[in-house]
Length: 277
Ligand SMILES: [Mg+2]
Ligand SMILES: [Zn+2]
Image (tube, rainbow, N blue to C red):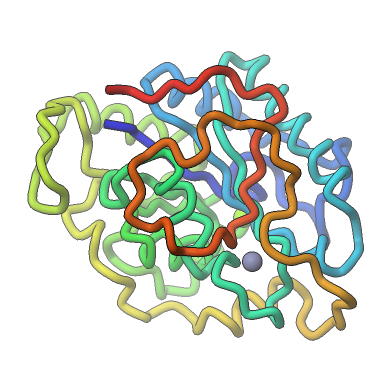
């Protein structure tokens, strides 16, 4: 049974900045976030990142620069003893109305499919309403951290009750791993796999669809990305060049017909496939 955690980037792993992180030097890890990724890695989780990157479609930077930022992120995680197993990006602007841009669940579903994971046992951790809505729409156990925009998200008073809350990534992971050790599997949301160590993500309602109490998806994301800036000739679909990532499509997929819209970017130095039996 693959245990998968999907992280938002800004406000969860690194400090949210004014505007966008447009270069590696602007990627500043939040305290404890890299160590939290390492803890997840050592606890047997695959760690993926799902990030909206509308600046790509606006020409504010290119894939080479985004790759450089992500190389720095991955190197920092590895230096802390962790590993980021995959990065999914949405290169589109809100106006492009794609299925991968959070709050839509496309990137999360792609990652879940790619790792052969089960949505109800996959954990999504983010700091914005878009992250929460994407996590719930994908059927994940969904966490909000107070770092980044998280406190503002909580202050809106519209956080669905099934969303778990942590102070930051370090605290959320601490809760997850503690709970993982303490709680038996609940069953019911997913077929039993005989894995007594699996967790249910802190919510017996994790697989429920979102209740719609957060702001409407399109409006919120348009606001966050600066609205109606005109995007010339936007990139389409998967932008990252294929790099022979062995993790791709490792699971038996029921979704082969679904077009790849998440822009999954294989990591530069992806080691051998680590699919568990
Ligand atoms: Mg964020
Ligand atoms: Zn997209």
